[in-house]
Image (cartoon, rainbow, N blue to C red):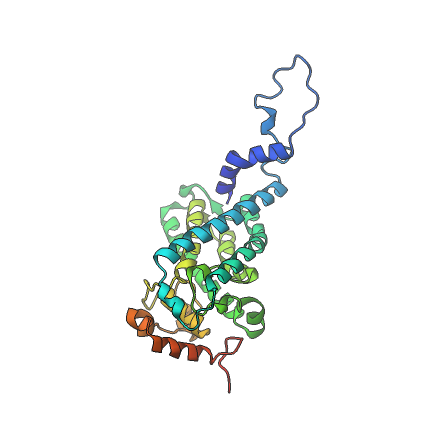
Length: 311
């Protein structure tokens, strides 16, 4: 985030903070024409490395990015990828898109606020992010991408399963499972603390392991795009190794399967894997009214905690 913050400081925040809290020097003698080479209106008592300035700047950068990213990429997916026929499914909620957007937008400020300590630690040099590719070499840089995905996938699997623990599920994760037929706009429609818990591995990784700053930014974008892709109903990834949209759709339908974020490894190891079948992969069956009725009936067999009803 220090790269983004530095750019924002240069193009926006330096002038903003200078006007908000200008630097006021001691009185200058009449003939002293060399007090500063730079105009005083470029200075603020809140220097770039001031922790309160950094916190405030990062809050607005992150919040604006989150809102723009959500509407831009989820909007593209909704208009050009999402199968709108799914909106006729009996488990698609009335006015669902509006409800998803409302929950997402209301949650972004709190999600941003609780995430800021991680970003603040990064810009203040406490993480293991680096900017010189020669520090660890190209081989490690390439390896770190896969390592990042496998590490975070493993962590998110267990966090996700924890969120399905009945008492936790009801208070945090249930809001996201309202969307039994997910859309791209449901990708970030969750309790902000739910979203934060599942984001912790991404931030924790760079405090444990070296990662190039530009790779980190790229992966940050990828993670959010992937979150939208697995909710878009277009099952491009249907293999047994990648936990794509077809797998995640089953998670929304049947609650207790396919907790992974990118891969199916942990689901297979821990007995929570469910392979998508023709109902998800065959386009005609995916829109079949009888299949939809069957799915709706199966969904009704779960209680409010996502557990099968006993009677």
